[in-house]
Image (cartoon, rainbow, N blue to C red; front, side, top):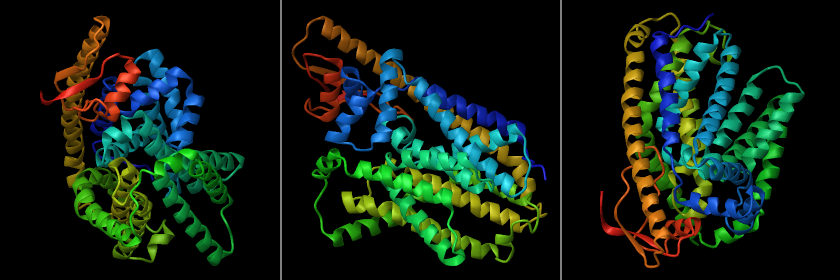
Length: 462
């Protein structure tokens, strides 16, 4: 069956518009916070030595740090992050497109490139807006390689697993992607280790068989994760983590789960539904009886099973953060949960559509309004974000010109900045603090190589 997407021309235009907004925002992106330290280390040595420096002293996510350092080196040449954002976008769109393509082929639905492109970009836009920290997950170089690139690697691996045809390239991809994930992000990696290990054990107990591709992926991920875990920087960084009892850690985990399901995820539900409606449309066009795994169960049964799995994955994801940090952790560490949430909504609505084969009760309203809702949302939201990014970049550049002028004037005393940077929208802010010894202030001073410190006035004007 050929996949039909009602209102496809408008949805395709919306997908292109989202890509345009993403790239334009990337063009206006500027170095912020940790970027200054990374840029300094790369400038004074090279990407490899800078990676070794962090591995020895602070951050042992060696794969993600190395990739980030390559683009920091490129920034020193180009003076822009635009190449990094284009590469990130291509990586995510390609990997997600590979998985969606494998999924559609598995359920015996044919499609053309424009349809696949439209679905892929719209699902990514749904994930993008569902992300708990857009600026960290997509517009902060050193955390984007940690929390978004590793997910792209898993999407590539998942597409290989879904494909029934396995060959040598399948094993190569499994090892390559597993190795990258293992050295990028502990929460996501630990979740995969637990989940895949459980999957392998269940498969062995039921069929006495093992998926060799999945096993190779797990082994590669474990090896890379071991390199990260055993790094000297890991030991030094752990000294700054709070030393609390197991009962407090358990309380934090419970509190984090409650906050996630009562506050965080409900606030993202409207964005996740954008992709869920696509799942419903695909489900209604899936041949009745073609999915044997769903034929003997009701929608409610599938919903309960998916919900239990989703809750379990969230619990596994939050547990190591609560144990190490005694708190929920930074929003960027939950980036993969946003992906899981969108997938959870998509699969539920796909199954719902599949179970209502031939029923046009919901298809007709969706055909009329869904494309316009998506187009309006992306247009309005994107315009607002780009306006903020433009204003922020202009103010940032103006501040940098002021600092350069003060360097030329031979300034020695502290520079007090009286006008704060505006809201950067999707971008990560490089705003200073009123304290010259704070991390961002000191790292910016080190990178800019000034003889004077810089602070923002406590009552700085907007």
